[in-house]
Length: 276
Image 1: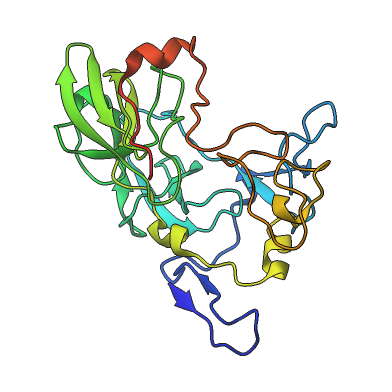
Image 2 (image 1 turned 135 degrees about the vertical axis):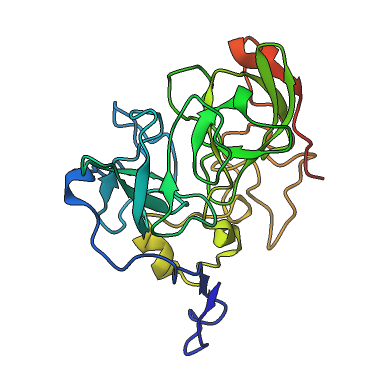
């Protein structure tokens, strides 16, 4: 972590992740796309995620989550910061000079070779089928269906652990402590996602949050009863309810949000352990 000197009230306590291992270069132009800021709004213009808007304009980096080039070794030529995700990304180059971005695992260095193959290749950053990996291996960027591309475990510092190989399925312990089955023909990358210090980052001041596209949020207890279930009362008051609720009145403490008829429920062996 990088700690700032307390030269002002906003700087006091402000931290950011250590980026000294990143390559000092501009992003690859051919792998950039414009990204429109929708300020938390859906296709119909309605706000679906509150407290979003503004922020510094960003370009989207095209990251390869699948396995477009099998059995072709690529060389890591740069480690870069991605403003659209918490993890760092790695720029790799194939023998035909074609370049691509991938999620960088913790410990990957410039010059290291990575490869995606159906054969067992247990090395940091390599991508292979789950059935080729031994019990205890840490993996990330995991497919849910063969050929779909990685959709699980992509946040900074996260990894899933292989618990068992059972028939056509592999049992994984997810970062949420949930244990689930995944088809063993699905691909996964070996290692832990980079930037593990991200969860310790302290934004420090409101201006930094605004540059990140985070708008102010008002506490429910500071509102009137008509505006929020926590509102009302003379002076400072407790919420007056048995459980915390959202501003729309929905119970928000330990409530299961997963759909009961979700088709993938049958693959869950053990639910996640709730934080007390």
